Structures are given as C-alpha cells and as structure tokens.
Image 1 (tube, rainbow, N blue to C red):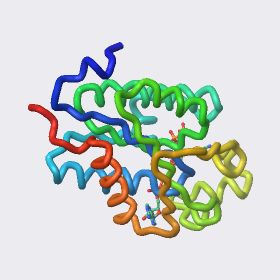
Image 2: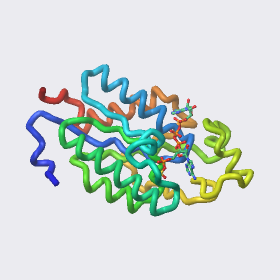
Image 3: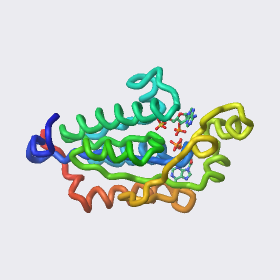
Image 4: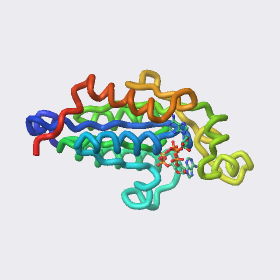
Length: 188
Ligand SMILES: Nc1ncnc2c1ncn2[C@@H]1O[C@H](COP(=O)(O)OS(=O)(=O)O)[C@@H](OP(=O)(O)O)[C@H]1O
Ligand SMILES: Nc1ncnc2c1ncn2[C@@H]1O[C@H](COP(=O)(O)OP(=O)(O)O)[C@@H](O)[C@H]1O
C-alpha cells in the first residue's frame, strides 16, 4: 500500500468517517456535505452504508464479523480514493471502536465524525420503519436496540443532530476540514 508521502503534491484527500445509529443523520449530512464540496469544485465521493451493501459488500449481514468486514472494505476503498486527492465521506453505522481505529490507520487523513442523536429521537424518526420492527421483536440484532453501538470516546467532530439543523452540522464539518488544510482544490 502507498503511504501519505506518495500523494502527489497539491492533492488533499481525506476520509470523513460518519458513524452513528440508524436514523442519526449520517446519509443526510453526507449528501449535504458532498453537495457543498462539489460546489467548491472539490473532488468528493460518498460511500453510504446502504448503497455499499448493494454492491461492494453484497451478501454480508449484521453479525459482528460481517459488520467488521463491511467497515474494513469501506475503509480500504475510501483510503485508496483519498490517496488520490478525493475527499471521501462514508456513512456506515460502524458500531465497533476497534474497527473504526483500523480504518483510521489506513487513511492519509481521517476525520471521525460522531453523528449523534439519542436512540429515542432516532426511533421516533424511524426513517425506514426498522425501529418499529426491532422494538416489536421482528428484527434481531438491530443496532442500539438489540445490538451494540460503541460511541466514539474522542471523535474529531461531535454533531448532535437533535439540537442542530443539518445545514449547521455541515458548516461545522466544512470549518473543520478547512482548519486541517483539507479543502484546497486538488491538482488536476
Ligand atoms: N440489524 C441491523 N442493524 C442495523 N442496521 C440494519 C440492520 N438491518 C438492516 N439495517 C439497515 O442497514 C443499514 C446499516 O448498514 P451499515 O452498513 O451502515 O451497518 S454497519 O456499519 O455494517 O454496522 C441501516 O441503515 P441506516 O439507517 O442508514 O444506518 C439500516 O437501514
Ligand atoms: N441535523 C440533522 N442532521 C441530519 N439529519 C437530520 C437532522 N435533523 C433532522 N434530521 C432528519 O433525520 C433523518 C436522518 O436520516 P438519515 O440521514 O437516513 O440517517 P442515517 O443515515 O444515520 O440512518 C432524516 O429524516 C433527516 O431529515
């Protein structure tokens, strides 16, 4: 694998790793941030858990082993892209701290973002109706209900989506990327 030193001068790839419960707001924030970066002509890709599971990690389930495989594959692809100057925004629950630490180590620059809202808020949003099924016992091993979620202890950014509008969350992320020098346009 290449190291960060192999990145061509002038590129500023990074992995913006969104982690949080289902319904916390990962996809929403990912898409809004991607739109903002595209608007600035910054190369960006979104690897969303749901979509990734249809292609890159099709066939995996939600055991710890399968979740870890899913997260590692996302981390690997994200890092490859980031090494070529792309800002990659990932949006997978990624419930285990140890696996998040593994993918951090792969990336040339890594910003861990805790997309946080209380379980009751996520369940009330119930974007896909899965919480209702999980609470009714019709869905086993659902994160936060009958499966673990290990919150980041020291995330690079902590967003409370029950307290801040999505647009404000995105502003904070843009500020953080700029602060880290990760927003300059890539060399073409
Ligand atoms: N058992 C169980 N637990 C959690 N989530 C479940 C489960 N079964 C299906 N789903 C749906 O799959 C989405 C989570 O997939 P991820 O790839 O992000 O999960 S993980 O990172 O591998 O843990 C998650 O999408 P989001 O709501 O976007 O997070 C759910 O819609
Ligand atoms: N500050 C916020 N950030 C992101 N989503 C928010 C926010 N406030 C409310 N929401 C709503 O919460 C829901 C989050 O759903 P989604 O983005 O699919 O979550 P996830 O990808 O984490 O499962 C959406 O309906 C979104 O409109």
